View 1: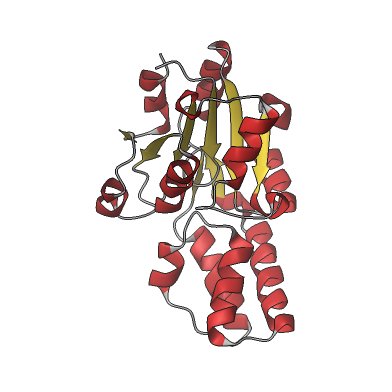
View 2: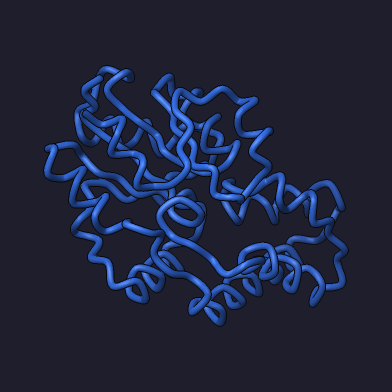
Length: 218
């Protein structure tokens, strides 16, 4: 299989986080605004746009808009304060170079807002120019499992055959995003979600690490 483009997820796939960094940021934001939230809910929704997660819970709880906005703002601030908890996944830079050397278009997608994304890349020492496409769920207007980022990347890079496109992530939402776009999917068993749940989604490839992607690109 010769792929022409690969879209990699950010946190959990190309970026490691100290345990409970993302979920902890959510928990503190909700708690500081007197809203109870279940860990299982947050873990089940990993991979989705972060604003969508807050809004979906707020809708089911009838939380006022001003409180919803405050929760999301607090979440973003918590992530900024905890930016030191993120580091590159093993071999990430080498994988980026490997993909580019094969003349495959390289994309990076995230459910985090642009400001946090830019801050994270600066912390990691990554140059956004390395990527042929950057997808920010809020800017696309929809988050995973909606395939908006994949569709946008395919359109911008003139990729017409979905079989030539590979989505790589570490959550159920990533796999479903790829399937909803009709492209090939690979999941990394990074511990973000239960391995059994990920395998049940039947991705095209199951990887133990990001570095294993090299074996399916040639």
